[in-house]
Length: 164
Image 1 (spheres, rainbow, N blue to C red):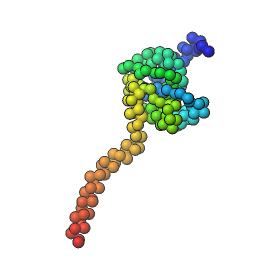
Image 2: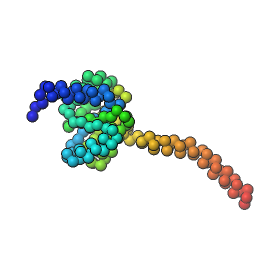
Image 3: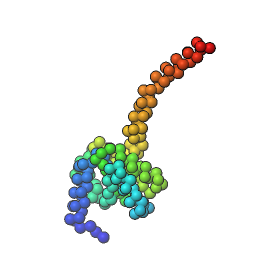
Image 4: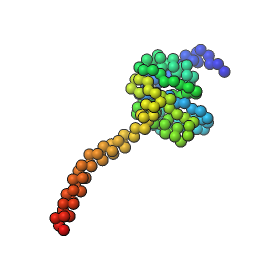
């Protein structure tokens, strides 16, 4: 069934508003994706304050052109949805990537918008695999602690030799 011009304008306006407030956007390809799976994914994404919307590619392109991002829009084959957030810039890519691993091929990243520029699928996948901030902080603390721990171990070995 065809969409009326008024409905198309309404969708483009909604997408344009979403893109204005978005800190990052992920383009999502979905195939063999049931309504139950989509509902489950929307619930998981909403916990991370990520919104998910399915629209026609032409309407998505039109809204993206109005926004004026830099770079070249990645190819969007098949059925396309968008995931965006106003908070954590990595959340849309990470949420879609993680759910896509569970669904085994039914869902994948096609690209996205990160820091005002279009990125391809490979770059968005790299962004999606960045560990969460709490893990990065733990890794940083471990790096800082490592030389101190080495010094303590060396001093303990010296103490053992002297007392023996």
